[in-house]
Length: 389
Image (cartoon, rainbow, N blue to C red; front, side):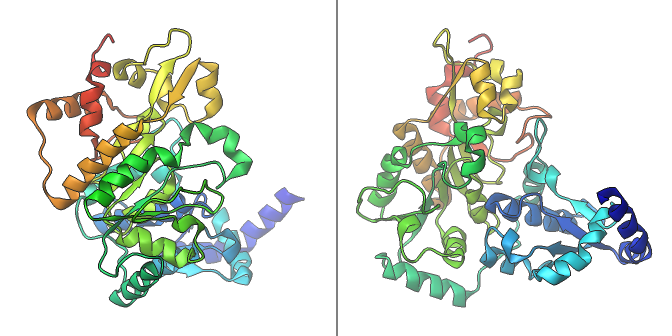
């Protein structure tokens, strides 16, 4: 019955689909619109590809009723650049056009890329430091800072968004991705380094996340009554930078042109963040039987580099170790220096950076990214860069 219905729909929509194709209209098929990272990076890459001339010029249409949206406020921003249809009725009326490859524009290549290279790294590297597609109006900025003031931060405060992935966001598939999680309290030294320099820290994320103990100049926004889709967008769009990990929430800062410092990155092939000016450090991998850390040359030449599920690490006797609070603090300090224009890299820093980047190859998730691995992290673990470690 389902096959028959599909054939009838294709027959009924055949000529209209030809017309839409000729007019250059494409239905942009966001892979997981209920996940904030995908709702950020996939429309962003589609638009930037067009601007850069990396694909034919299409008029993009997004079919996305409210029940499918990870963040309604973000989708409102995309509606300024794409035709966004949120009506449940028109979603069902127009959905048959997705049956035709000529009408559909797939976006899975931008960020999903199981055992392959995510195209977002190449696109963001090509985009470089051009202005972002999305920008927040001065009126909205005033509204957001007024709300931030109600949470305790001065109106003229600069702040860093802080986030660490936990299991509450998607409990149904948590068993698949738990290797990506980390404890928010391991970011406490980094938050102290930020506040000691005059900044504020705003902890973002889900209400299911672990509550933060009280710290001066730190706001646990995730558990505040001010939390909303709109405020999520404001905070990520206006932060000094985003301090996070491999959770897709950091991409909400990326699409507004903000830099990210990302700790606890996994899988290893994704150790290079996708943003042009981002800095990242990966988790450490240890052989469960020998107790030895796995060297980067060995790792990035093996299938382990692309492991995307917790069960794969367990099956290969690989322990996944979180970054230390000290390593995360050094990462945050490096990004503070980078944003403020005071960063300085020594010759050995560049040599370590080059050695790591030379290990990245086609098929690795973030191959082609124009970001960096943390300076102090590479210095501390430079022995892991040795070929026969």
